[in-house]
Length: 356
Image (cartoon, rainbow, N blue to C red; front, side):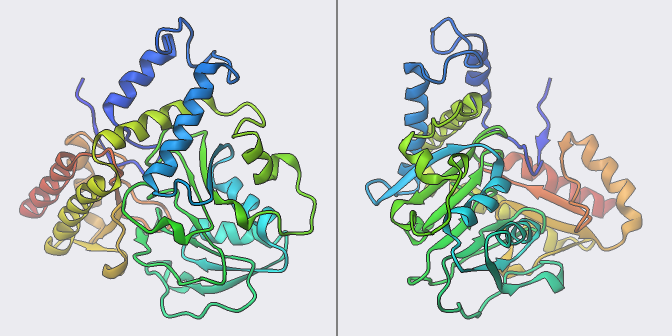
């Protein structure tokens, strides 16, 4: 059976070779005779998996030996909306409101203190990234979202916050492009975009920003507890961590972030060129803020949607419908998506224009 061209926003496409090895591990993990689904998380085999996954994460982000710890946790990015504030917000924090998930993070932070919106694009339905804003003095941290999956915007540069720890939700573009990751005090990302299946969340935190608040933090919410226990304070999401490790190994074999960024740029340039050329479509976001991961676009005439939907579905394309907040279409092009899949979509768009 031919695999669909999967543009789903997440859970999403992963490398086929990762799927193959992961499926084998469900029966027998590396000749152990046990399934990865039943192996003890305290066994030497899984401890090795966890250590390798954490090490590879720091290696790809170029944060080895720079005072950072990598953790694999549960609860998705939504749990991190809460945890970042629980661990870091003493008096006041700053937030960039660039989409639904940023807005949710602000809501959670306000349980712990003053979460000030430093800049927002809400009034324009989040179709651009705010720029030229000032960072208030005295913030405990500044929080941003690097890529907004729903709206298709992506931060190309980040605020210079030398006096304020910069916290970033990178759930939908982690490991997709080269960035100076040392500018961040803490990064978090749900696995289900560029790493693995839903269930695990990567947190990379600089240790020296922790332990500075006065409140008591419950153990399950405390980064320092998870650092001390090396991500093993409670039973971790074993399968999701294992698949994340396999995906990070795949990234290493394929040249790392620098190599994958070139492929991601080629894919995004291909789809955006067609959106701009094609007389039937228009992009949703400001051109300078377009995401390499999620291209959002709409039909100029909504009445044509049934015919276009029939065409892309008949071309074995999956997951192209846009989020209800935007409508139209969203082509999510994570690391494992091939440029051939984008070429199929572009061909469908060209054919559609020629038939109208």
